[in-house]
Amino acid sequence: MKHPNKLTALFFIIFVAAGTVPSPAGWAQQNTPPAGDYIRGVKAWGDNCSRCHNMRDPKEFRDDQWKSIVTHMRVRAGLTGQDARDILVFLQTSN
Amino acid sequence: MSRVKNKNRLSPLVAATLLAMPLGTNAAEDYGSLKAEIEDLRNAVKESSEWKNTDSVVHLAGYGAFGYADQETEDGRFDQVLFAPIFHYQYRELMMLESELEIATGTDGETEVNLEYLTLDLFLNDYMTLVGGKFLSPLGQFRQNLHPSWINKLPSTPAGYGHDGAAPLADVGIQLRGGIPLGKMRTNYALYIANGPELAAEGGEIHAIESEGFTRDEDGDKVAGGRLGFLPVPKLEIGLSAATGNVAVTESTPPLPASGDPVRDYDVLGADLAFKAGNLDFRGEYIRQEVAAAAASVAAEAAEWTAWYAQAAYQFTPNKLELVARYSDFDSPHADEDQEQWAVGVNYLFASNVIAKIAYEWNDGLEGEATDQNQALFQLAYGF
Image 1 (tube, chains in turn brown, blue):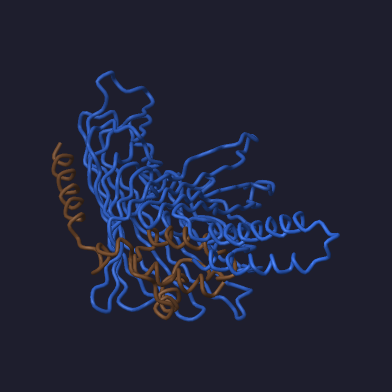
Image 2 (cartoon, rainbow over the protein chains, first blue to last red; image 1 turned 135 degrees about the vertical axis):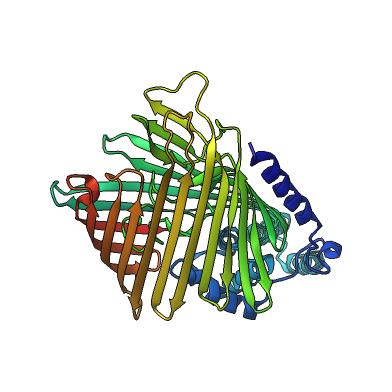
């Protein structure tokens, strides 16, 4: 009986706090996230992807397919939104 | 705008062409035909590019595998046929629905279908995503990141990392997860609250801890926990996992009394490490689940499940052949489930996502049990 109320409350406090975390500067005004960067994407791709699985060739997928694959990996690998956008630009440019 | 301008430029050209034609030709028909062709071309150009930039994206990913196993005291058999489609539905950089099914042929020929996970991922900001639904356990690395057969470097899971093992498999609830850069160090996190696992009892003892993910919560208490990952340098990740809550026996032989079984404390502790240097890949994990004693329970004693493994793999340039070695150890409340295992394997990478694996396991368990059977394994896996 000691766990549910405290833990649930703690989690929702974190959730509410999460809503107050600001997005990157300018995002709100533009209503669109900052663009990805190719050079940063090359590095982020090299640093992160092979830690769990073999590297996939950028040419394996179309631009639209990479979009959802990278979003999936953002959640799975704990990437930041900017990391994901950088990697996406690299993959879409290299396929 | 450019299309409109082009249209205005083309019209006089077409008109001049028509004027220059002999009066005997059907000028009006030619003009109409040419105009229709231009319109078709304009639509084709528009359609060929619009799908690339839609707000909604649908993508089918996944993996499949078949395998063969030959144990010491049994005839070899093709023991695995697996299809695991993964569906991605994404709306802008706001929401993703992702789901994996596991469709496999059972030993009796029946097709088994399981929902491995289904989550709605709401991207709150660059550093935080709310994940709700049934998710793979975020405790440790193997279940959430390494279990797909095209990623796992051996045909089998480490001892204690399968069903009824020491590592929780999945849960139903919500998570907050994401990544945060701390100076030059990267970190990632996953915090969750969920219904938690259940216990099965048999003959007055806890028989198993079941963590496939339930939409019921028989004990009425939630389990909360998570994992923190630290990357002090690229390609080195150190993770710490923990969870706490309550669980209860929900299945029992003999049956539970009508009043049910009392709740008891449940705790999980884990650590994992992954390191890659050139073509060498090293990883290891430790996980322990424990439940406290409950005097009024049909299975009063405490129980503990512990597993760990260490694995090293080396890919030979140009990355076609790969050697793998893994040690794993699983301790449970029952001696017939305990297992110590050495596994070595050779993989051939037809492509980075098409892998043939041959492996041999030396298993040390209770004599006469399946956990004590050495076996040779083959698997062909394809990730798409």
